[in-house]
Every structure is written in structure tokens, then in C-alpha cells.
Image 1: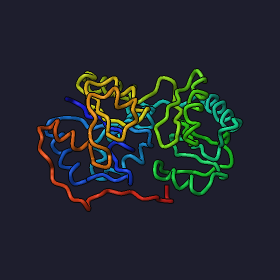
Image 2: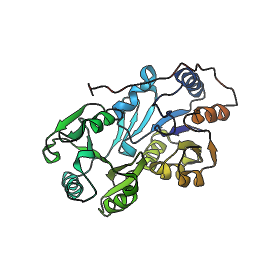
Image 3: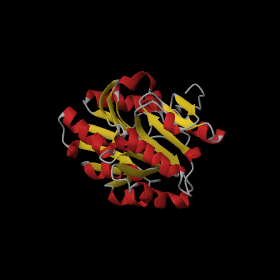
Image 4: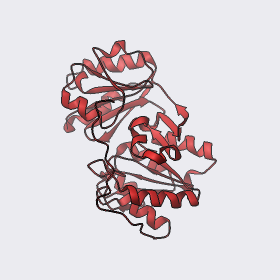
Length: 283
């Protein structure tokens, strides 16, 4: 076991976006002693992910934006942007689709994230849970940035239909990360592609990697690694390919399983020790 990778929302984090910091820091110290890398593999923005880990953020590895960016601490080792003309085509299709609305779309770029001025206040506030440096714009076509990912929210019953519609674009990959959302990145990008980058960078085999996930944007990553685990709250497709189903995110199943993988020692924690980053309008 050379690398442990975990999704965040619905996997590592509880439903209220917290985790047991005391317990994790003790586990992480043990991982460092054993020279095991710890990877955060998420659809979220890199800057946002770092905030969860405060003083150890530079010691972690990040597969951010569903694989579009890979960071080793503060060093970026891979980045893939969508071609500008493709961004325009996808945005145009979204704005003109009867079941889509630009008011629930966010463009994630290298300089920041972008939402429309016309978007509801509740949507803007929700996005602050996942992104930093959010900028409000009058239209997406005037955004001057390299766009890494397009993300959008829909009614639950429409997600599969709209995912299929967006995947009709030959150069993009659209996947649902749960939470009634779809992420669009370059066609060759996924959390698995991020894992492959790390295999090359650290000269390890995918068989030496352990990964945890709960939703469909974790599927390829879990299939690619040596040991794949699903949380109890995971969707059935993820449970079906997992080596084992661990306790839910609310029960901190990822930490429980890592403790077992490290020899079974249970590290002390406090029920009041719940890391939380609330909504910040400075983002």
C-alpha cells in the first residue's frame, strides 16, 4: 500500500462537511511514518480542498476538479483546460436547452469560479461550499479565463438524461457527482486519469493504491486501483464494484477502514472535534 485516495463529499466528509480532525491527524502521522501518500480526489476546487486541512495542507496530494488538476502539496503537476470554443458550445447548449438553465451553472477556471448575476442567492451561497474566489458575471461568454470544468445543477429526475445529452459532445466527459449535479471536463479526464498521473510521478503501481468513494464520478478510479472501498451511503453501482462496503460517511467509515489497514489501532477522537468551514462570502 503506497497511496490512499479518497473522495470528499459523501465519503471522507460527514453530511455537514466536517470530519474528525484529531483522529485524522493521528492517522496521517502514521501514514507519514510508513511513507504512504494521502490523496484527496474530488470534484471540488483545489483552493477549497486545502482549507479542510489547514496546517497539513501542503503535505497532502490533490486530484481536484474530477481529475482536471493534480497537485502535490502546493506544486501543480497536471492541468487540463477545456478549449475556449468548446466552452462556448457547451454553454450555448445549456442556455438553450429546455431543461437547463444558466442560473444553475458555474464555470471553474484557473483564476477563479464564475456564476451568472441572474443566479438565485441560494445557488450562489451553495457554491461557496465548494469554490473560492467566485466572481459574478453578466454572461459566460465574456469570462477571460482558462476553464477547467463546467458544473451545473438539475432536478434529480433529469440528471441522467442531461448527462447523456452533454456526453454527445465528442471532446467532453460529463459525469454526475451526486447532489443533483453534473460536471463537464475534457474527455480524457477523470479521477482515474489523476491516479495515473500520480502512478507515474511516484513510480507506483495502481495495484498499490487504496481508494474510497460513493458516487459515479468515483467509478473509474475505484475500478483502476488494487483495493476499492465504498461507503455504506454510496450508490449501488459503486457498492457493486467495491471490495468491501465500509461504514457511512457520517460514521467516518474511511477513517475506520484506514485504521484497520494500518494494523487495527483505533485512534482517539473527540465528539466535539468536528472541522467545519462555513459559507464565506470572501470567496
